[in-house]
Length: 336
Image 1 (cartoon, helix red, strand yellow):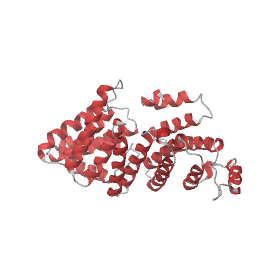
Image 2: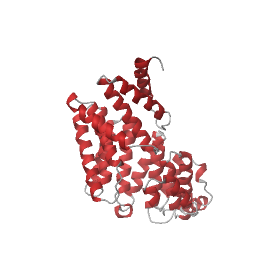
Image 3: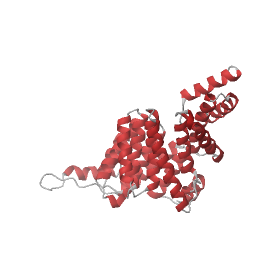
Image 4: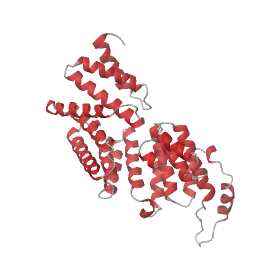
């Protein structure tokens, strides 16, 4: 757990090799593989954890109007012993999960599966998982799961709807995530604020987006000064988002845009993990556009080349951006 928290995912996986037949160990392995963008391995570990949980957990007692157990429950319990979770579709797996006694472990597995499907851009499957997770959480006591899983679930729903271009639903779920995390989890609130700002940036409501970015940056800065963990990434992420916002605003904000985006790039160096690689690629795109607007074409072209190199390594692709960077290079130095 400590190695995972430090971002040393391969070392964490090595340490976990000595732990077998443990659902918690398998969940952590799945989390590590997701962070390393090894999605097939991540899914295998998370489903293995679910299989253990399915084999060990009791089925919720289903009764008729008079409180008598239904005969079908016993037959289902017998079938469950021979259930191979790997052979089921995601929808069938969710039906099995819903039949189990709710627990924080089950909720964690569903959340991680939803996140993994979202990162694979399997948005419909991720949405189904997340919707079922909300229903599962409604059957649990708040104290049993804490505040982080409900916040993460609402945040992920916001991200999914944002990718599906349903801004109204995205805004609703980001707002719910902020309300749940208010005064309870300032770090998660800072992350949600940053994600929420994307909705306003795509709508070209840059002043509203700037306000959310500034709130996110203020919370990250305050947290870092209070905590022993001096990880700069949350602050740098807020820098990048705020810089992107300023690139799209009036010229009077452009100096701040350059300062924030260049500051981000100076502090994020290889080797890159999945999130760092994607964030650096996005930041380079916007800084290249900024230099293009300022007429600094040699700097814009240099960044375009780096963008194309990093973009080829990204799991998440930006085809429109790739086309734009290639066009910028062709105007600067001939066809690419």
